[in-house]
Image 1 (cartoon, rainbow, N blue to C red):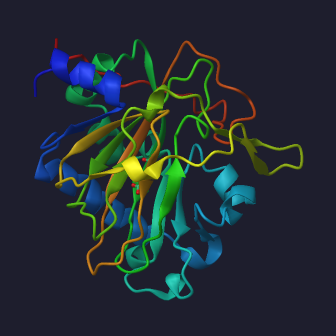
Image 2 (image 1 turned 90 degrees about the vertical axis):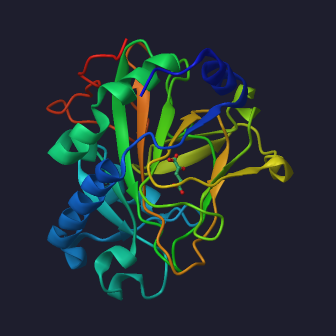
Length: 283
Ligand SMILES: O=C(O)CCC(=O)C(=O)O
C-alpha cells in the first residue's frame, strides 16, 4: 500500500474525508471481528451493561462510561429487548475505548506501518492513539448516530483529532453506512462535550444552528475500506433497518504536542499513558 498521492492529500484537505477501499485485507478484518467475538463471549452483561445512545445520552452521566477511556467495556443498544438478544452481539451498540492498547489483536491491527503512514500523510507529526471503538450496528435495532463532529468529544487545543474508520463488513445505505458533509470541516466547532462540576458531563452549545444536511453524501464502503475523517467534519449514520449487521472499527488519533484538557470526558489513568503507532513508516 503506497503512501497517499498528492491528489488524495489535497482532497482530504479540501473535503475533510478520504475513502480508501481495500486498505485492510479480508483476513485483517476477520482477525478483529473474531477477536471481538471472543471478548463478547467473556462479557458478563448482567453485572455491567449500560445503554449507549446518541439521542438519549443517559450513558454520559454513568461511571461505567466515564471510566471506560482506558478499559474495554460494552454498551447496549437502546432497544426494549436489547439485553435479551441471542447471541449477545445482536444487542450491542459498541465496545470501547482502549482495545488498541489492552488487546494484542487490536493493537497489532492498528499498529501497522500502512496506517501510521496514512496518519503521517494527513498531517500527524507525533500521533497518539487516543480511543478505539468497535461499533456493532446490529440488524434491525442498530441505532442512529446523530450528526456530530469528533473534536467536541476529544477536544485538543489546537484541534487535532482525526478518525480512522474501518468497514469490517460491507456498509450500505440500508444497513446504516456513514454519511458526511464534505468541506464543512473548515467551520468552527458548534459544541463541546465536557465533564461538569456535578461529576457527570454536559454538552456546551457554541453554535445552535443545525448542519445543512441537504448536502449530505453517503459513504457506502465495502469490507476493508478505511475512511479518514477530519475531527471537524460533520458525520452521521442512520439506524440499521436491514437484516444484516454493520460492524465497524474506529480509531481516534490526536497530536502529542497539543493541550488535552482535564475536563475532557476521556481520561487515562497515570499507569496507562497514551501511546503512538510505534512502528516504522513506509517511506
Ligand atoms: O460508525 C458509525 O456509525 C459512527 C462512527 C463515528 O461517529 C465515528 O467513528 O466517529
